[in-house]
Amino acid sequence: MRSLRDGQRHVRSVHRQHRGVTRGLAIDLGSSRTRAWIPGQGVVADTGNGPGGEYGQGGPVRRGRIVDTESCGRMLGRIADSALGADRSDTVIVLSHPVLAGPEHRAAAREVLAALGPSSVIVLDSARAAAACAGPQDGGPLLVVDIGAELTEATLLVDGRVRDARLAETGLSDLEPDDPPTAVVRAVLDMVMAMWQQDRHGAVLGALRKGPLLAGGGALRPDVTDGIAVRLGAPVRLSDDPATTVVRGAGLFLSSVLRQATVAPALPGRAG
Image (cartoon, rainbow, N blue to C red; front, side, top):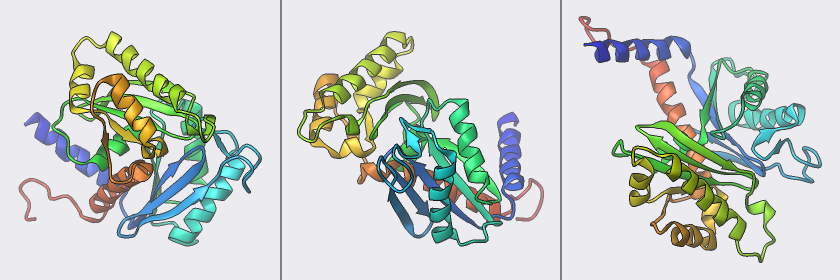
């Protein structure tokens, strides 16, 4: 009965926290591009925010961290205006962030989003977002490798929770167009091997047997995916559009929150 009561309390808590929200926006804030997703519409924004753009010489996000909150706020404000309109009092915004984003980045993200005027703000790590997009899992270990423009992360999920995570401050923007992706592939190999050396329960090996899930723009390059598969000696898995895996996964989480917020939970012993 304890697990049932805990589940009921969780549902009621989510309902209270987001009561009244009827609309929402999921955002994947990257170093080179920012993508936004709305339930029922899909991806509604795919904005470049890299160096030299309208948001500053270096862009508002560098190596997965917000470095210019003012320009980041302007960018996200324009996306929110277009996607949700000026009145956002009945909305919730879900923002994905790197798994190893520090407290300063998460605080900055919450501050920027709160200034947009939504009813509620949720931050969600990119590995769990990618796993949600990949579809139902068997509950066993899952290795998620997210290869972005300036950041690459490898995350071990067990039962949907982060067991281990590693980060390399390298990505596709560090490569010349015709260069082989040696540095990125090597970074992935080093991170996975470091996890393996620290793993006492065989979770990394189990995840490799199933094949790591690759997300991010780097997963669109066959030389990257083939290189990782060869160096790890394991098959790799891709979603149908790796570049939007994280924002679509955040969007699925958003859809769940909206359903829970608009449908009152039935209580035991009461008519449904």
